[in-house]
Image (tube, rainbow over all chains, first blue to last red; front, side, top):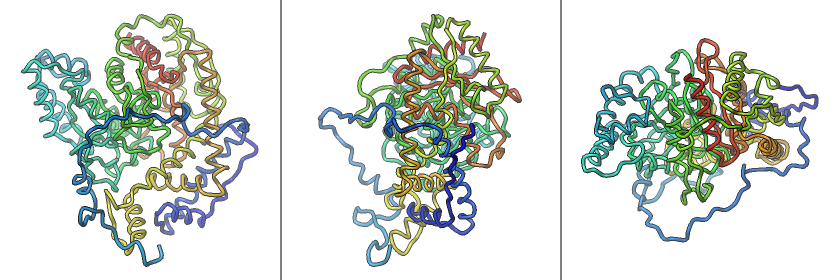
Length: 108
Length: 483
């Protein structure tokens, strides 16, 4: 890999990783934080390689060929009724609906 | 057909069609190979023997009644455990989907069934496709059949290993940053990735949606071309699938007659003169392949794509960002693992924490960070711009060249447990992930051996929807290789 002088460090802290895990709905132990913090920092530090390129003239690109909407023909097709199969894969079901523990009433 | 050759789809299909051998016999032979070898190799998560034999019987009935048969008649195939298969478990090699049985088939699975192929099982892979060594599977690592102390590559390591071990002639994989080409290279196989949008992804579990492609392994270029021709078509069920016709490639391979002035550009940065980490034996084989192509009538020159220096750094921001978003759907509500929790949020956290493996968590966290407020511009937006620069460099290169050439992997198959640092594994994607960033088609073809006598793969990269010329180069490499 090439050297570059304007390297940035992410300065990622355990608190940052803890916050990110919280946003991503993951629970981390103290040992997890010990392990992930330097790993995530080194991945993010690699981003400094991009600093040696002048990217001002480039538009952020999210699609390799330029995103366009592709529509299918407006034709009615038979859709198989997979309700039963779909529900059968769920961990908990009641009255043909997905069942979850209480979602309201406590701090989430 | 005195002995069933499980290395050639074309031979099997011809023999089944002519009645020389039954599809059931071929399937039994494939299942016997799996039984004999897979305890050690671990290439299958699920072997669907009964369903396979029923599919084979249906093919034999078609033969008996004189019905027309598809191009893969009676050919046993392995399907990466990332594709939905109706009635057969689809785990993504993750504990979070360990017992999930999809209610429908992926389009690529339907395509092979409609072509009268037989699905013998679901292949092991890195969890959700995240990895380059198949060591990130909840169901154990896959071993390379050429040397069982070494990795087969990844993430489609099981799909590569089952073909390399002679269990099936064809398998389906997914290629997001090299997950078919790299294991093909490490296992001595042919592996292609199509143009982004050329093959339907309906029924493929999404990982990084602006990079994901459906792809396949085979032992030879002709079987690879037949797979591409089968899979490449428009599909109304995938809104990212390009409408209209695709180039056919089987005829190109069949009628191959030299390269006739085709302009081939060897990518300087990936040829040992720029980015480090390429084994000298790999570069030596690249040089041999260049001579072979020149000998076949190609005009070969060097081309530089400086943006490749930062491709990995951009890819490992964009890929985790997309993954973190896609994997938000695994919440223990509609499918998969559920761990108990006092309220819904606790349940979701507990389920995701117990269900996802280490690498998956790493990517979800990197992606969440890169997309979070305050860091978006420094990471995600910048990486998207780098992607634009890389696309421009490829576009410019194709003004002077028809096909670009590089090694597929900087290294040959490495020992299981030999690379533990995640970053060191990411760096091995240097020749493959830029191709996904630009949405281009590419193919890895075995060409000679490197260290320890292990296979080296050479990658041919074509412009978008230019698969025909890519297969021309692949055929040229195969011919020279076989002498």
